[in-house]
Amino acid sequence: ILSVREVAIPEPPRARIYPSIKCQECGESFMEIRGRVVNGKIVCKECFSRMT
Figure (tube, rainbow, N blue to C red):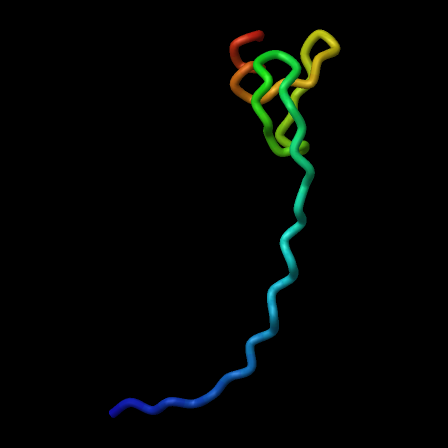
């Protein structure tokens, strides 16, 4: 009823690792690409939503 066979699956690309930076408002660390700029400060998403 069932048959098993080996298949060739290509290896997925490696994930990019972004550096962590600290929010200039609350001090929490977050991934660099998630940062937002408000009033010249780089802030996390939570502080951004609170400040706007």
